[in-house]
Length: 412
Image 1 (spheres, rainbow, N blue to C red):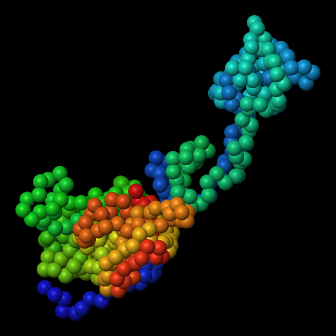
Image 2: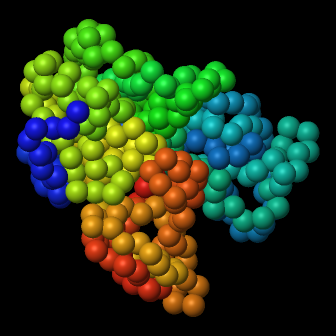
Image 3: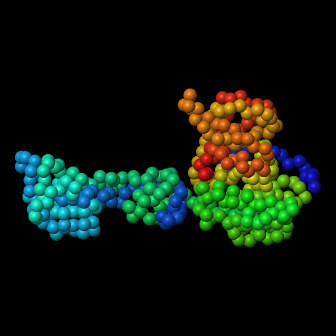
């Protein structure tokens, strides 16, 4: 059943502008360290104390005040030992040494540590047979950071080392960009789970794991809900009105975005109170894309083919996710083509998957177009690291042509 009124195609850049206007960042939140991996800091992290907080031995060995007497041979009487976590009863005086282990707090300033591999012990004395300087093999108090120093700057993405730095300073609930809550529904009676054997006319559900994996690059798994709907608009409307779809920040519906007899996505969304300013975009692939809003909720109706999913996610869905998180999107850059791209004509802009390479002669980054047959050719994306835009009405692009390129490899 065709639409009685033609639906206008919206330019990709106009959709971005719409998302800039309508999608506001969520409030930042404090989360425990075990839930902070990959999150973006919303505050500078300053050291709450000197690091290390005291002079400590960097080695297993012997601590002593280096002798100022001439010569390279000196004896020090060993008065005791301390390990990490212990406190010495007293500091060694002139001519005395203390057995120490790595990480042990040194009881006085000005000490040196002779590593045990160099130590010669005679009875209860340490024999030092070379000149030793004060501070040797000592991690001095505040040598890593002083109280008030910035340990991690605002806007840093928290990785394993960043989290360890936070832990070392006792900052166990950093303020980070909010993680949007997403509900995703795949649709279609012909779709079966990946572990099933498809019957006649059926296909396995690849879009569900594709979208989940792309989302998990920037959103914790616990914030992602997924389910499958059949071709029943009444049942779909009921699910849309129920949790978690009723209250998430972002809704994704895979399939049903076109204008066929069983494509109900737009109708169900409108009946649920969504405003749908975008129902088609001027893009190949991904033309039948729906973008809508209901209060602060955002919805995307994604065209069903997996390459369309992939392109629409990177162009549009992740743009909205970045807006919700309050982080910038990667920028587009002109890069030369590594090889020619023949027979690329289309009346719409084409977002072409490509691999990134290095031109070793010119020492520059180049993009190599990947062969793809149609918007269902999922395996064509296996080596994709960028999408580049082929302008409309372009018949071919020679090698070296600059193409506007956008990185997708950061999604892994």
